[in-house]
Image (cartoon, rainbow, N blue to C red; front, side, top):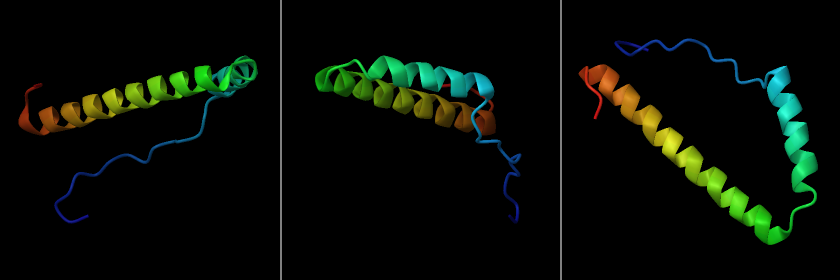
Length: 68
């Protein structure tokens, strides 16, 4: 990129610990009702949106030198 910020290459693979946690979660949700799964999914989506906003805010503040 010309004049852009160079970002490091990111490893997007799951760690062994994350793989294990994922398997545990899969076993746990197998016993949940559809309604419970929907509630959990909405909570996960909400948390991911909050995390996205936090990351965007940190990136913006990094270029401005302050956190808003």
